[in-house]
Amino acid sequence: MDPFAFIVIIFSQETGYWNVDSIQMPTSATFYEIAIGKGRNDDTFRLYSAHLGILLEYTYFDSIWRVDTCATDVYLSCIGFGDLRNDGIQRIYGAGGYWIYEFTYTNGAWQCESIGFIDDPTIDFVYCLAIGSGRNDDTSRIYLGHWNHIIYELSYRDTCWVLDSIPPPGSMVTDIVIGDGRNDGVNRLYVNAATNSLYEISYTPSGWQTVSFGASTEDYNGIALGTGRNDGVNRIYSWNWMPPPSNGYFLIEFTGPFWTSQIIGTGIGGFGGKLYLGRAKNDTLFRVYGMTNDNVYEFEYIGGWHRSHLDSGRIFNMAIVIGKGRNDDVNRIYVGNGNGYIYEYTWIPTGIEESIGQIGKKIIGLEVFPNPFINQCIVKFEIQNLRLPTLKIYDVTGRQVCDFSRLIVNSKCSMVLWDGRDDSGRRAPAGVYFVDLKAVGNEKIEKVILMR
Image 1 (tube, rainbow, N blue to C red):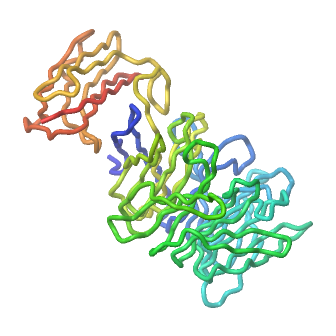
Image 2 (cartoon, rainbow, N blue to C red; image 1 turned 90 degrees about the vertical axis):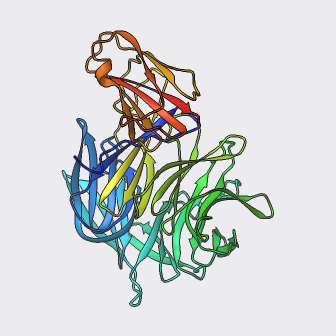
Image 3 (spheres, rainbow, N blue to C red; image 1 turned 30 degrees about the vertical axis):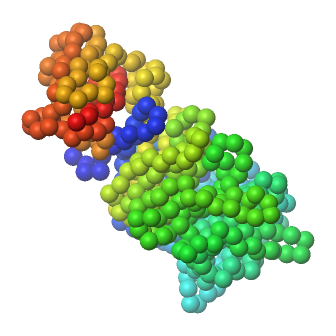
């Protein structure tokens, strides 16, 4: 059995759980970045992963992931999508060392072209890449954060690429996002730099202007911009590398004329903090998703910030993105790890008649009472005319506690009694558990709370 193919069930404010699948890549090259887009310009979303030496493409088709190689012998630490030639063709852009690359899918094959060169004999590493209209002139450009403390801007003009530099913020640039951070209709660059601060860089008639904001005693790493509170107001979100266990995710807001900040939640993990805003639960709410080197978190604002811990234990998480990787109108979270796997997180809501992922459309009866309970509870279920039924209980880590499947094989409407013990007869600790009733094409899950 694949040791990385498993399901994690986690308590959340909504009724449901996260299903975790793994996608393996056929190479041991170091993993750096993930992007989701229509790289072949054919209305199909695919995953793309950047590595030291290779660019890979993942296509979900007929219930399996197909992995193809787009290019080899490319040193990539970051990638992004854009129509930078203004010809209606989406291309992939990437960088890592000296060279900046453009990847185009044409005539059934991938073409790789070097479009820029950063001449720095001392340091040869581009840490981050962002694509957008940083000058507010309706022209998208590439912005590259380099370890030599410089931000580079790459523009396509007429028939050639032009590389410019932006006055450096004074330290290694670790992440860039482009957007309207002041909610005034003007795009700016928002930058993490290893000087315990965030920087806002604006293009004005007199040139680039840099403002420092979000000062801290420790380094920021990872940055996102958007309406994380679902109130139409853009804010900056960033991970701050404070001494464990107080590593924090911060919200920084422009209230005019000052920037104000607040912590929205803590997280465990040393390096590698990344953030992403998205509707990963496929409802109307944007949420903030944070990743450290060995944890994944969700931050939701409902009258205040609430944190859910999605996953832990896999060190060297490197990248996070949200999108419709399977082309089924379901947003999922994708986390790239240094072990050579991409982990796919699908939110499975319970108690509704809609199919997400591989959950069947027909819901079968399941009821647990009393709930919460102290000594025992009754699990009542209905499995009329359903094939291969199973009834199992899991704890919040996804570990199976009890298996009642052999008792219900020939039942049509029945019940079982759970006395709060596991299959070995040991008393289960107090906490949240999930009763999972499953048959071919059907599944229903109920949360139950055991009190001691």
